[in-house]
Length: 229
Image (tube, rainbow, N blue to C red; front, side, top):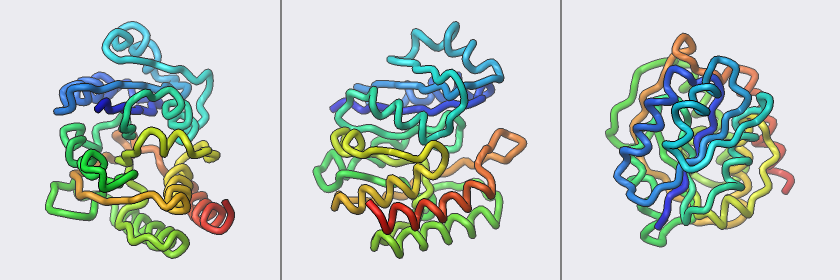
């Protein structure tokens, strides 16, 4: 079993070294690391070219910033592993939990696994109340259109059988990827599981990028991809 880890990266010079080291230190032995630099302007690209290039399997560069969804679309297309997982370039999610996330796929129980920040007893950093409210609202709205009972649609940790994710045409360029992919795998009748994960959230001062505009786009995407193939 080979695991492909797709790392979309935009202006993460402060954390890119740490996340690459953390992914390489994960318990998975056969691992493929693909970084997609989405037009970084803070020196991240220089770090990737001079210091990290030999540490990972592939680095793909977008000439300008196009968004997380666009970066993932590029990364998914390049993956060669049996299972593909999304890993943000910040330090909010712990690669030590890869075995937990992909276990339902390894046991042939699931085709897609969501790592939920709201299940189980794993540690979570306490941060923005209204973000949590918005997340639960978007997840509930998504569930109404997909007839799933997810607890965390917006999570970063999503793992897929490679043939599943490479069989999906992703249209969204930014954070609309999350509701789009949820609606599309639900329509494919994939076996979808959730597992509880840890969450070490960061503040906007620490580099968090999602904002209220992305919330409105998520509502549009839930309705758009929930109603029309």
